[in-house]
Picture 1 (cartoon, rainbow, N blue to C red):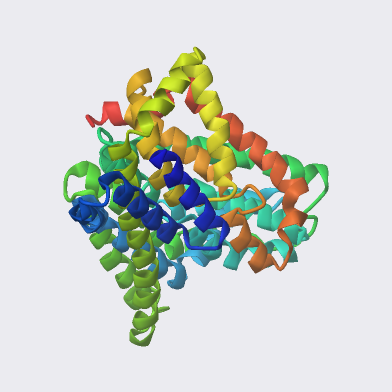
Picture 2: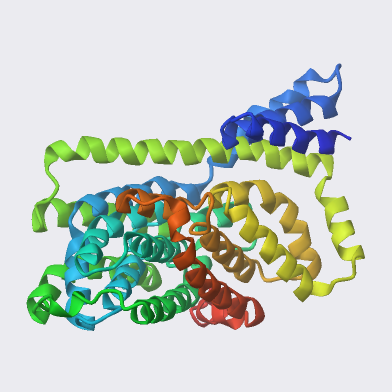
Length: 432
């Protein structure tokens, strides 16, 4: 009864417009209070204790640093230089500018861990360039919104950091390594329909008339940005620093590039950059703390046990259960952000994962791919919203284009579902 009330209170608060973090905390607190009865008021001490325990975790130190890295590189002019270099590499023909947008988003995914920040950085440069080449704004927004979704797969990833904290048995380095191949696979899955749609509808006719940038000078300009993911990921692999320390190194490197190399960031800009990163990090940490109260209530009330029993008694088997879960997570991703999905549903999914003996690292990559799909699936696609705002189009105008990108991305996710080694081979070969 109390377990049902927990989710009813949570759902009612959401429908009333209460922020999801507050809804999680209040729902969990009400359930904890009712489960302890009238005479055991001290049981409510579990509320502040679990709030603190949820945020006082060492891996979470990396989270505000990677948020700060995204803010720094967003203002450093790195995206523009990467775009110029990518155009110099792939050339000028129909369908090449969407490829450039996808490739640049993937590289920036190795610097920042936020999909909306990636969409803003790439969209700020690419939407105007694609408009000049003759691409419809709705198509451009669709490509950039989908391309930015690869950000949470290609390390460093804020989603992987949160998953590692909430799910025992999945370390941050292992998740970072596991996301590489699926992230690249997702990028390729987006490139194929982007080129096909461009050429089928004869978009970008003016692209071939634009001059191709010189290769060597554009490489020189983009080198500092291209070196960032090599430094972050290579340093972790070489054992020079942990993922948490890598985030700090990335911040120092980004400030060096922005303030000294490119000189696009001044001392006066630092205040705004730090405030933006602090606000974003504070919101995430607050949601994490409040979700810890919700997770404790779910665990204490034993809500997960009947859910697991119900699913297992259906007799669907591991693969069919995974596919159904795949569909549910995709639908949830249309309405909720990835952090919220992890925090609400991982307490329920953890016993299910143990029952079917799913690898926690592979399961984390699969869930993250589902969330990535939701980030550019209307009606509440966060990446697509950012791209549409920059392109000045309504989100419903992107539906004819984004549908093809969704189908292709889903195929990539299904490949990871049916062939787990696509995610597990790299971390195993690296000894994680």
